[in-house]
Amino acid sequence: MDSKSFGLMIREKRKQMNITQEYLAAIVKTGVRFISDLENGKATAQLGKALMVTVALNIELGWVEK
Image 1 (tube, rainbow, N blue to C red):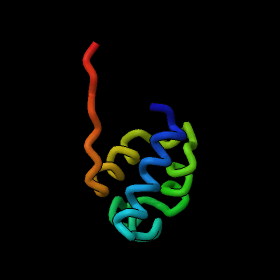
Image 2 (image 1 turned 135 degrees about the vertical axis):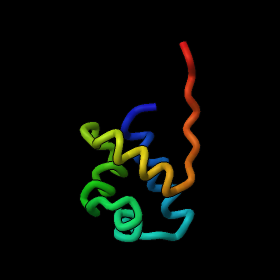
Image 3 (image 1 turned 45 degrees about the vertical axis):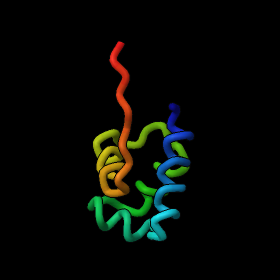
Image 4 (image 1 turned 60 degrees about the vertical axis):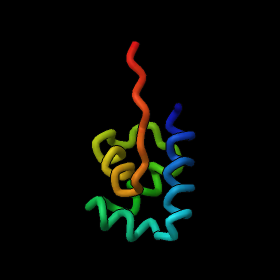
């Protein structure tokens, strides 16, 4: 999964839950700009904050061991 696909997944889930970027930003204690950048696939988005967003949206990430 690349940053663009990840961002699209975040946006789709947020919209499915019918919440705004502003509300999501408040939940994860970050700025709306971060949520926007994340949803738009900005590759420099901070991983820790991105993972907090997945928790807030109840997204389970599958991890593959190599």
